[in-house]
Image (cartoon, rainbow, N blue to C red):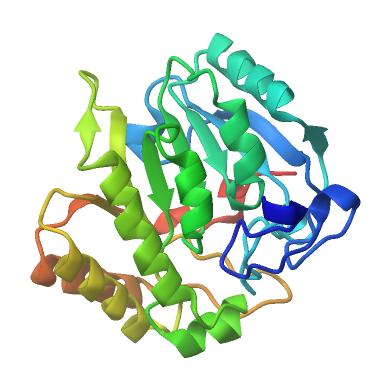
Length: 285
């Protein structure tokens, strides 16, 4: 980063993390890993038979009031790794049968992660992010990420500001997702149905924010032809103690979102069983 100031996310807060300063994300310059494990609860083409080799990073460039992983998104806790150490984490996961390397909330460590992927792993690398990405971070990942798994949380700027402290979320996320698709192209699957390359856009339907969901689906349908990206429309909203919305998603709300999506376009991907909205699906950190 130029002059050691952080430009990894759209906030461009220019914190000198190498000197011990912290910006909005509160993260140091080394990559902090809260957990690394084989994860079986991703979409089937991600988890596969043996599980996704998932690396959960601490810290976040968003501040979602409803965050399911609030223990690690707001608190930067875990083990610190340099690039060489991260590469060792990937090798360990692969030795246990990981179908891929799944980098969760990688944005604020994109520089360290890119260096850790100098030697490409023998399995697909997934950049699993909140969607609030900078062109700078995505350029670092060019040729290193095989699969982009971004959220597209908001089409409503007011909701983005209120719930995630990111009023410019939609414009930044749209640009980011278009760049992701330019880099990796349309989905490519292996013989056993595992995703090898491509973009899967996740959207979590929020209670009371159906118009926000409709706007997200409208943009995806307008921006991509059928089959160019995958959609994962999620029902798993789980309210936390301090945040909002403060209630679970109703079956009627999710059904309306699914009906809207199906009427709008021939989306390929996943709709989620409402039973996924259970605390037991949230990892312990």
